[in-house]
Amino acid sequence: MGFEFVGSSDASDLQEDGRRRFSSICLEGFDTRMYPYDLQLVLTKHFSSCGKIIHFNVPRNLETLTLGRFALIRITGEGALEKALQLSGTDVQVGGWPVWRVLAKEVKEFTEFKGEYLDPPRPSVEVKLKHVSTQRRMLVTGYDTSLPEIDLQIGLSKHFSTCGEVTGVMILPTIGSISIRGEGAAEKARELSGRDVGGWNITVVSIQPLRGSKRNFRTSNSSRPNFYRNIALTIQRNEEMKQKEMKQKEMKQIEMKQIEMKQIEMKQKNCVETN
Image (tube, rainbow, N blue to C red):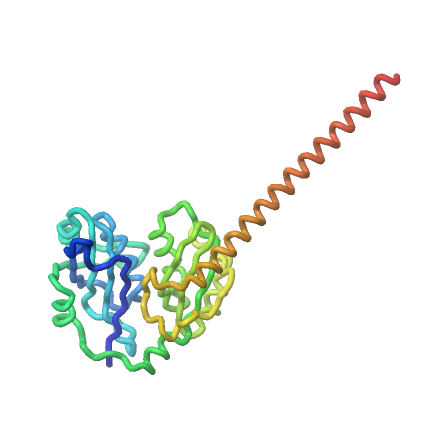
């Protein structure tokens, strides 16, 4: 058996003056049966009042698909460490997931976390490839765009988690991009298309193989290929153009109606004058 690092990061480790810009915290007490990305979303939401999580890392056994007991987050912000440690021992209740109690402990260096809390063996290449060979990218619409991004990510990930493992959710104004993997996950997701989800009418617009999936073992938001972002933006622009064309058509119909009414008025006026 071996563990895979599942993590994401969107900031560099050091500031310009060479000082660290973050605090490292080791967490335990979470449900190790959760998918890594779901855990990342839940922890991001739970600690959102403390600061911004800029890095998330958790070991995972790819044979049993269970997480290690400990996860590492790096958090930044004024007083972020103190605020996060104050939440140690509190219940985590986010997005309809089962309630669990998280325990937090500061670690000074990543090597301290790695040496004390991780199982050194790594999964073989064959295991990794088998794990990601079914990865797909879906484009969806129909969610409530007025909600915060993290709530949309949690809601969409929770919705499609019955189909397979969601490994990433990217939110755009009118369309979302979801990475999912698992045997038959894409087909199961398509079957959910059009169903009402707490007022959301989630529609799967398209499903595509994930480009470069054999090399993509991270859940980082920053590692998503621009290729799929461009597809999502193209579909979004097409939708906006359709709406614009419909509005122009409606305006044209109104103008034609107004012209027709004026013509009728002129005819009626001419009839009155003739009489």
